[in-house]
Image (tube, rainbow over the protein chains, first blue to last red):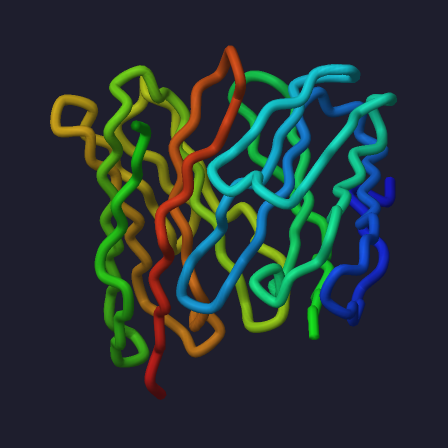
Length: 112
Length: 113
């Protein structure tokens, strides 16, 4: 099993550009989520999904969109990048119930 | 709203000493409490977890305790080693519904040789 994979590993954008961060898992997990991690700020939830076709907002959703058309994939779209979105982005997945969450390797995004 | 407070934010200990990190959660319906370790430049990785029907769980040098009445849970690391140096995050979640994790803000542990 590859676990949780993310692409790209690094990305540099200009203000106003859009892009999609890809996330995929091969563990048949119901629950997937996106976090951003800024220095000293811990992990903040952007969006999450409890299954294909079901998504909801986390604590910092503004400027981001998600969709979940399949169990495996959960892409995060930046609509119009801003310097405040410079961060490390982690995707994670877990099974339902009493199970831990598995994180992808992260995407380091810089917005100039 | 739901919240998890984590203390201390930084912790330095001598190699061989014990380290304790404490978390307090606000949602009394939370019933699953994992701990994650994140080394510099790496992803967070699950190191231990506890369910609400258990008061304590051990795995070699690490242990987690839970006090449901006080809504506190703690991570204990004994005989610390330099490779324990990392950022540790606690989280609170439920086994049903949204399964959403609420993370603490992290503790940077430094083990001094």
